[in-house]
Image 1 (cartoon, rainbow, N blue to C red):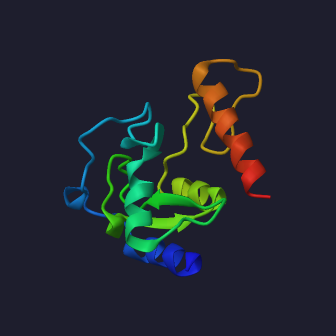
Image 2: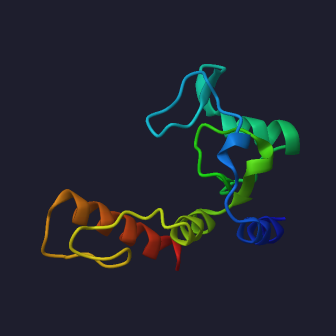
Length: 130
């Protein structure tokens, strides 16, 4: 289940990206592989998960242990909520850092792109961590 997957993700540590199976076809603007099925773009890592494990429950995401969005190696994937995804990103240091602040703080008066991006991510994280 999700708890086991989260525990495994934290115990296993970083995954060697040389073991990734990268999608070489079309990708979205964030680097995730995508395929059109029935006229609809579908993420290849989600398709790989569904093929191996069945349907993904509503509200659940397929996360990457390897942090490689093009990877569709099911050994690198695990299920989690948006909150799990944020916790994973924080643990791996993948939150944007503002020049004038830290990972969890930013200069509210500053409107530079770095501070605005850090503020946006921080506010989304606060929402999902409730």
